[in-house]
Image 1 (cartoon, rainbow, N blue to C red):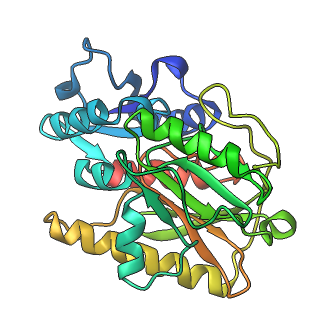
Image 2: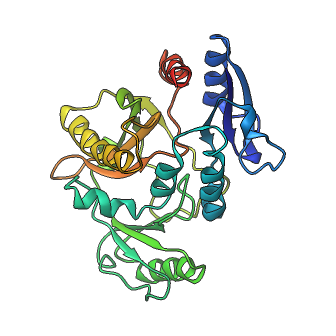
Length: 291
């Protein structure tokens, strides 16, 4: 089997977990190549499956990326599927989770043409693009920084980008964030992500923000919320004509006074922390070959 692990030009040799996955696949007899998604010279028909992994630059050219996914899905098996990629690259998908009753961090969207003022100026909050990756263009702002909040939102809106505003949940400062990783719809492992956004911090430079990670056992409540989010994904897949769960998914959860809530649902290019959890790269490799 020929497998393309899809990446960005800046990481054309893959990241640490990508190389670990490639090794796990090769040990099972697969021919594995790192393929840059926007390299016009790649013949996608020559691969049995293309697995989207480290395409961290997609947020800057999301329309091109979605078009690429749709085109490539007609040339080889793409994981995750193009329809799920198109849906989950834009955080407006949070509206679908909310409609399904999934507990979420409260979310307010501002659209190009709207004013930058929003209802969270009086509390600590986060302002970020609705299409983003790696915490780029994301700011944590206090109630005493309304001018900075408005200026950041105005800049993003001026670039014709939708803006997502969410309250900052202080519980994360002590408990951290929980990332639940699923392979073929089943929980593989979970990680604790230390608080990333600091007061007064500048915007992230580079492809992504560096994170402090450790293995975590998710609570039953966290698993319940992750399962609720994945039921929405299953409904999307069924609408697209398949009952198969995505190859991989990551549900990012924050603690709140009312229990765990979904911050993000990652189906495109998330770190899966394969280099932190022994056996997880083998599990994903087996799932890829089974497809």
